[in-house]
Length: 340
Image (cartoon, rainbow, N blue to C red):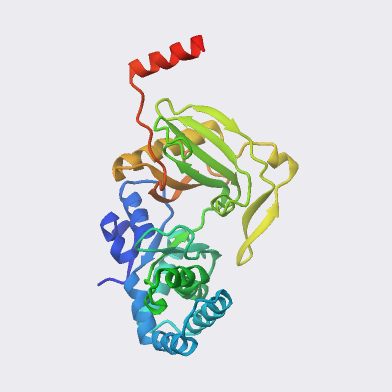
């Protein structure tokens, strides 16, 4: 089994091999969608790493020693100890060398050292469960961040969930890892191809903020909101967010910064950019057969539409799609509005 593949070499059918996030990026790449270049590391790679380095045996000894994990403070302590075990191991050379080689090839394509995002990719969709590391540079740092992503399968959230479900912590599922080029984002955010509050299938909704999309995904800011008519692709409603903070790439990582007053008072997206995001979202919705929750970014300094990148897509969760009204139902609604 191949442990590493370019996104362009994989697709939706590889969910179980590389994780959903990577498989969907591969599928988007096959559809000629504007996705960053990068590669996927398989779920099996983590399984091999844990066994060959002896980390799995050490984790089991630790869990046997502590016994029950009902106490929250103990869960926190054990999580940190397990993560130290994982992060303290060296990736076996038969995996480390190919990972470094793929990163070097990525840099060679661009003619310079490339900053990448190292993202978790679970076989099942668990938004926010595992961890992501942004603006990573150099092959050694890439290897270190891959280990940190693997270690996040034993983070506090995962341990607490498994204890609550009565499942063995040692059997926490392994995950895939995506390594993809960072987008020098002027702004970024999410797009729901149906209205995420009302379930209206005739309207899409976009949220956006300056800088990287993590500020929107994490909910730390009041973002700009755009409601787009799916048929005409026209922006029919806009709400200016406060946008007090933004997350930007800085040094060997990211930084949270204040947005200056002029940035808070300006919309992050032009209407044509919002329309293009929804247009691509509709293609993905049609291809995957269900409404999509998409992460997007606008590359600073590049012309439209070459500045638009899609970073992730997954099914919209927890929203009941409204059934479109018939002509007769619309006539009745209009009459009711007129007389009442």
